Image 1 (cartoon, rainbow, N blue to C red):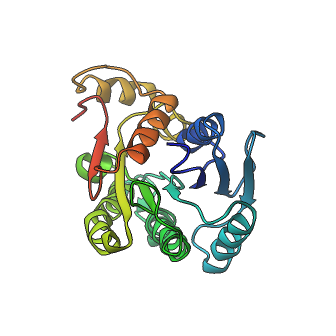
Image 2 (cartoon, rainbow, N blue to C red):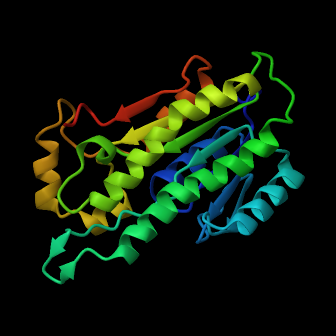
Length: 245
């Protein structure tokens, strides 16, 4: 796969699932540009660009920097996201519009902003040996389909990301660009640790078919690599959750 996809842009790659993927890409010889609000661990052939994914100017500047150094990326993975939860009618009052707007801005607008600007560069790349230009992998969540109490904003945002998949895959097929969405279940990341109690976590995992444990970030990274390597995976929204319902 390295010969086909050796340049990548990963958003939200300074921590959590994104960081695990960036480490895997680095180990595999990729030249990676990470768009994040924070720096991450120093790895071979990895550049961190402080960037707000909701900003057109910041994302465009970051992608231009990446293209000048490595060439336009053939692999785009949108991991950046926020998972703030609130009940509609909570103890502190009604769900605020500000919180809903923040979640939608980062998870939906940010994802769309990066993929549209990255695609603009990708369509000018030459075809690889197997006839494709690249792949865009967006990260949604099983909350898009099985949201819990307090996840109205998060679930709505992740459902929107999943909803982009097929229309974009159909549109970009003529450019030999694939679009795939991955919906992780419960993975042990800082976001999960910050927003999900151990009691709730154990309750959720009892509904998994197997394994009844949180996913490992490296398992997520391995799956992203497999999707990127297989040209027949396109226009699909895939759950990665151990059969959790």
